[in-house]
Image (cartoon, one colour):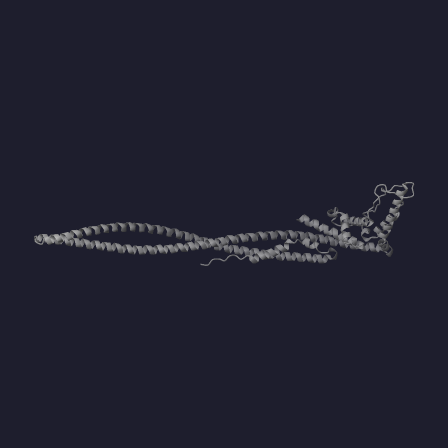
Length: 433
């Protein structure tokens, strides 16, 4: 009799673990690790399509593994049904053998009782034989004495002796027949009991094997349930990542369309208002001009404190004109100057009759570079398609990060746009989770 081997699921578990490991790393996290400034949209679409193809292959592999598990489960169920049927037959046979053993035991008990009765009868016969032998000896002694008796008495004694001998032979034959029948029945019963014990041992062995097979089947069922659960989790992850990939593809398409529009606007702006060498010199000399104005303002403030007089403030037209000319000549601001107007507030200054300027409320002004960075960040936010998701992203923290990474001044607008796009991807990813 052959029994099924234990289901080997090691390779299946390894395959599912590898698929689960690959799916545990979301696409957005891997996408965030890529430098967005150096990735082309076509390459990103190609990478996304390849990612979807790989996920489809892994999903087909999971389906194949599930089919193999279902087929193996059906085979195990069929074999277990056969074993259960055999176990039921063995139980019926075992009950029949138990009934026969009980019957044989009752017969042996009855035969033992008969043997005891015959043995008791034999003992009584032997006792009678001894008594008769003693009587016979006494009779012989008396017969010697009675040799001189008449013939009829002699005949009577001879008949009595013959009767005793006949009775003795009958008793001996009965005793021998009883002994022979007892030995034969003992041999028969011992053989039957030995056969029954062998059958009982075989049934116990088969029952033990059936229990081991049942335990292996339960273990296989647990492994199959575990694999089915992992397969279900893999399917859910695949659906979730497919949804994310579809949203990302839509976002990439929108970014592509937006990029094309921005390229067209940039071409139009270049044709209508080309950047001259003089404008570029104005941009590069902005920090020098602002530093000079700061030094003049500090000097005016110190002189004002020494004289303790009120004086009208110098006009801030130089700073305002310089900053406005730089912002209007910058490409990123030229695209948003229609929707955002540059304004300076004069609430911090007071005009009096003195010759020197004095601050009334806020003597410390922000760094002009930081002001330009914040204005550029706000302009880029308003021109992105996902403005509502990133409108609360703090510009001052972004400026600190740019300073820490030592981003060049002429690459601020590209760096800001990449950082805001990356922040939007992180928001989308957190919403999905």
